[in-house]
Length: 100
Image 1 (cartoon, rainbow, N blue to C red):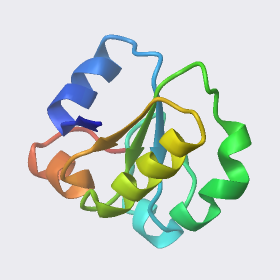
Image 2 (cartoon, rainbow, N blue to C red):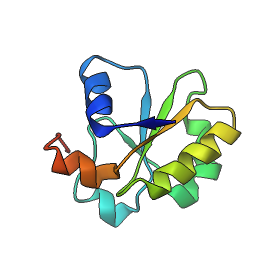
Image 3 (cartoon, rainbow, N blue to C red):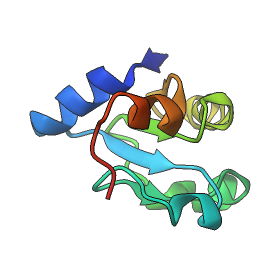
Image 4 (cartoon, one colour):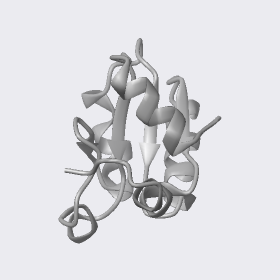
């Protein structure tokens, strides 16, 4: 399932219970990530899914949307309600949304 950067920002502003997971590599998140997001690189996701709450939706974020789609597929296969943010942080930044 997909969610746009604008939709995600609105959810975050309204106090969503969703978990935002940034699946980019460490050098990529050093440039900034969505406030409150948890950094779990895509390659580490299978081993670290236990850090996430299956009762809450997970929104996966990456640079352009490709890795987050793969992450959302992995999460959905493991029983999570999972979304991917379309366009990734490239679209998030292009829309002028906040990254800390």
